[in-house]
Structure formats: C-alpha cells, structure tokens
Length: 122
Image (cartoon, rainbow, N blue to C red; front, side, top):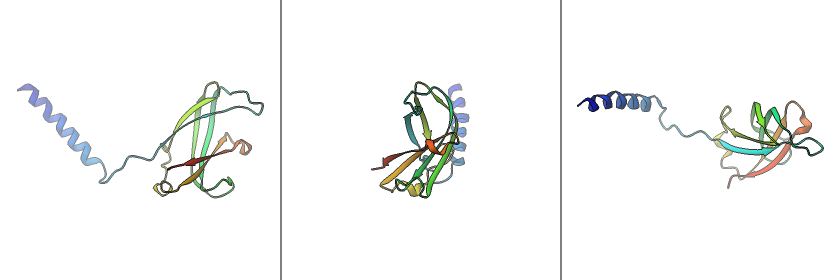
C-alpha cells in the first residue's frame, strides 16, 4: 500500500510537467558539428576560442546571413572541436526545407578566418 502512495506524487508531477509544455511543442532544431582549427601554416591549434557560426543561402559569404550563433569558450584539442549548433540561437524552421546551405565559421573577431563549407540537408 505504501508503494501506491509514492506513485501518486510522481504521477502528479509528471502531469503538471506535461501541462506546462506548450501545445504542439517540437524538439529544437539543432545540428552537431565537428571541425578542425589550424593556423596559417597548417599547425593544429589547442586552446579556448570564440567562434561564430553563420548559415548562408549561397557560397558568397558576403550574401545575407540566414542564421548566426556566436559561441564563446569553445575548447579545441589538437585542432579538433565539436559544438551543438542551435542551442542558444534556434535554427529557423524556414531553413530546413532549403536544399543547399553554406556554413561560415569565424574565429574571434578576425573576418579573414571565415571558412565556408557546403551543407546539404537532404
């Protein structure tokens, strides 16, 4: 009989949690991304860097930015880093049906460090 009493508060908590979620709530649009950082001589970097990620609709990084997410304090070890994009700045649903996107990456405030990589969502 005691185990039944324990289930009631737990069930009530789950019901309140479910009611607190907005109707039709969807999982956030996120993208796992792993990359490498190297200096101009090709030596892999190690340290903590501020990175800015941008999505473009074409390869011209000078074109309109469709989405942007700055990330501070990204740890890089032997050139490798990984981030989950879309956590702090949601990736708009309007970008999902697009067939082709380009990802730009800027290290710190240096615009010359931008690299653009082709992404396909299909």
